[in-house]
Image (cartoon, helix red, strand yellow):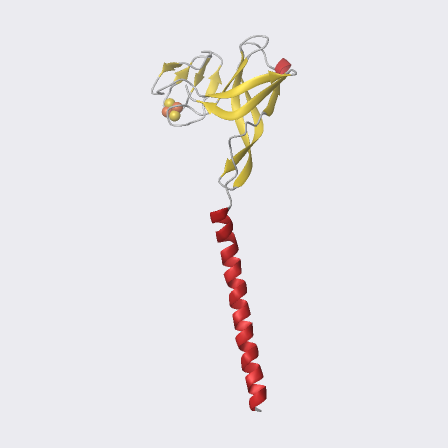
Amino acid sequence: MENQETTRRSFYSAAIAGLGTIMGAVLAIPAAAYLLLKPKSGTKTQWVDAADLNSLQVGKPEEVVFRRSRVDGWRVLNEKATAWVVRTDEHNVVAYSPSCTHLGCAYHWDEPTKNFVCPCHTSAFSIDGKVLTGPAPRPLDRFVTRVDNGKLLISPTIQKA
Ligand code: FES
């Protein structure tokens, strides 16, 4: 009887110790990975195909939608993004960040006035991104772009003016 009791007690002790070890490992492994692994580097330039150059008219701004990957610490997020692109001549395109440089509202192209207009606090920008009326403190921010094989490629890197 005593031998059987000892066996049951030792079994429960071993089971509790085993569960404690498993729970400790479940908590410790992610913590160790967080502390020891380097976050993914966001320094590599990624070029995203945003539009066909031939689909853009010279001097007519167009809002294009594209997908981009963004590194957020240890995660890589794939998200939708937009840019206002202006084809300036046969070979060159400028891509503006879609956020107003005042407080980040989305602005739009106003065809009658031929300006970018922000509805939040009535800032206006010329087609080359310069501030026409405030309170926007600086010109529109730009994405880095290049044209390759008739495709407009956009890098998610933003250049502040
Ligand atoms: S956010 Fe555009 S004017 Fe204020």
